[in-house]
Image (tube, rainbow, N blue to C red; front, side, top):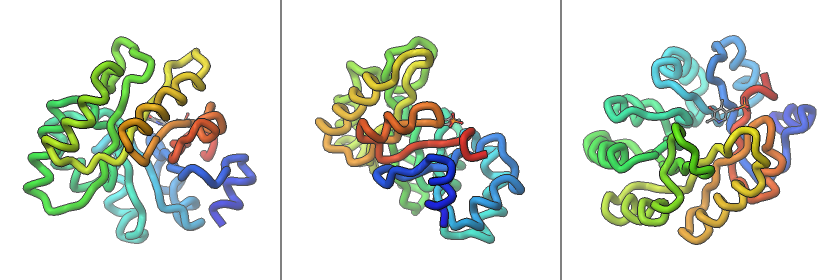
Length: 204
Ligand SMILES: *Cc1c(COP(=O)(O)O)cnc(C)c1O
């Protein structure tokens, strides 16, 4: 059902999971997707996500919610309570705070590390020259449930190089998940080994 819907939008390949990005969308806009049986959603802001999903979840308890926006350390508790996956672990400070809260809150979540794949200024994400060490630190020292990485390639540049770079990072660190690909570039992302595409505009 959902796959047929996505096929009509040209959005299915079968290799990558499809995360529906619902930031900026209200419950009325989201409901058709939920009724089609779609279960994985992404939000960028905790407050906005709470407003919509605390209610929607009552009706659709089996959905999984992913945090895909920058997370401030003082919001970690809220984030862990609300989300099933946090894709934007991007600093040591945040990693320490998440580890602390996970010990206090008995909930299982998955974590992806955001990588600043284009080494851009003013962009969140762990630097390329620190990423291997950071992954190790999170896994070994903090015992965090790191499942993979998430990237947003630089705007106005061909994304393929960055997708391949992300694939290499995941591969050499033995991480199974690579969250990459958005409305504009998801086909290439899947060709480069994405395991999850995050799509907003093309489905709404
Ligand atoms: C908004 C957003 C998306 C979805 O982008 P579209 O171009 O609307 O498909 C994906 N990932 C992140 C991190 C986003 O903020």
